[in-house]
Length: 122
Image (cartoon, rainbow, N blue to C red; front, top):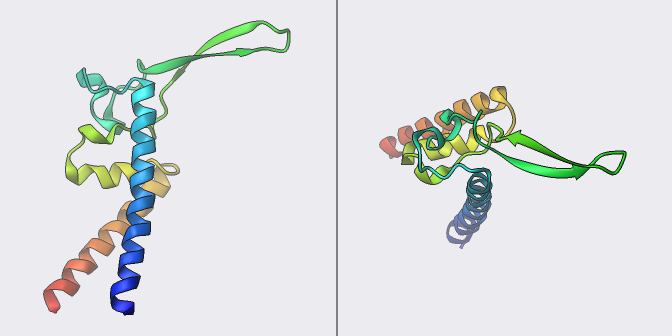
């Protein structure tokens, strides 16, 4: 029973968390203007995000309404337009800084290699 239920629960939780995070990332990218209609807005972290952003208004200390343009952060990525092999690594790079993304990428590659080694030995 444990060999059937535990992997099913793990898959449900893992896919639920990763799927919800990717939906959130795509919704943020769409609202920020990464629509994929031009080459500059197409490729995740490689997009030219200096021209893509959004305006937001707030009140300063004197009660004046100030409108400010904010560029899109690097972690905002439209995963839909990426290749299948890039989606996982773009997803991992959206958390933390460059060091964390590199660390998680190395751990992920080690896990993939161990999976294939284990599969070929059995």
